[in-house]
Image (tube, rainbow, N blue to C red; front, top):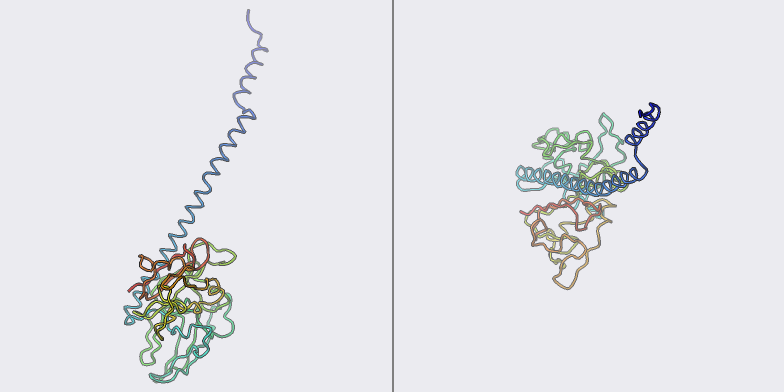
Length: 320
């Protein structure tokens, strides 16, 4: 007996509706699988992203170290920075940012500020009375200082923000030579002015946050080549250093502008001859990639935890 057309049509409609839709249970299963995959993937993505930040920062620090080596070759083994370590210590008021206007003369030309167009953003303010070691590195590798010389005498001595990146100048009035920059940087992403300073610093490759909106400064601590490495009066073994300058305080944390200096733990000493328990990567100075007793300089990024002086800091020690 033939099936009425209307009944056949209803059955096929029901079959079509069943095939084209999902039940509530099926939808919940699919949503659960997607949520599970997201839960597995997001931590992996975050981990890979942090690893990329670390790798990019290591690459940046390696570039800076190579630039320091090139500078040292040109300047008879000296490391970058036109100002002496004593001039970088904000607690030491006996040294000013002054140079001699004539060879062998007293330091009688004090650093001024040159506001040349285009106007920096934010504009330069006030005067420059101290330069941190980290800013000193930028002045040494990228430049920023300018002098005018007449009859072998320096007439003016100033800092020009717009000259940063043009290369350093010799402060010798007999040979005021302009050098090319020792490091090529992107001023928008690799330099930042911090703490209201007029002089920018090199920054690491981690994204900005509330503490470091433009990335954390790559700190630079410089010692005289061949001098024992000393941090705030303690030698590389954690013992008290008894030698006089230049054998003490070669790496002086006060050379770093606050608040960065304040973030370092106060060095303490375990039993005599012990190590630095507070600076984790100073725990064993015999290991590769850690300070030796005759480091030339240290470059430091605070690493993933964004705290200086902890075990995940990304460092380069200029072991001669």
